[in-house]
Length: 77
Image (cartoon, rainbow, N blue to C red; front, side, top):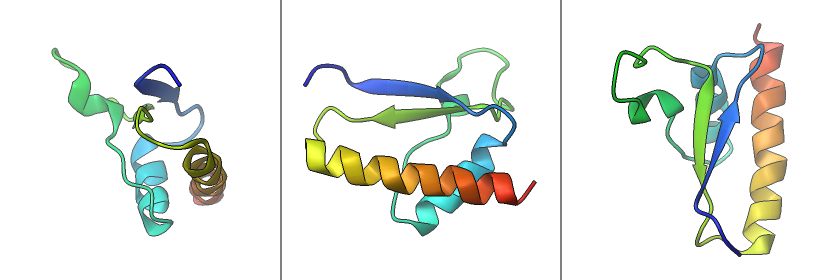
């Protein structure tokens, strides 16, 4: 597998809400705002997912959990 990070844009939902719901499901990753150098610290529309050491099985399970986190976050709107 190649690659290291996947940037996800959260359209219609706050990325902090997705992060909170994902953590409840055992997924921990940073919000994208901490990776901006200038003035984007309050950006709540991106997530940055790392996947370089994850197995395909782990990625599949993570995808299911991430989808659930988005569904839960959208339900809070």
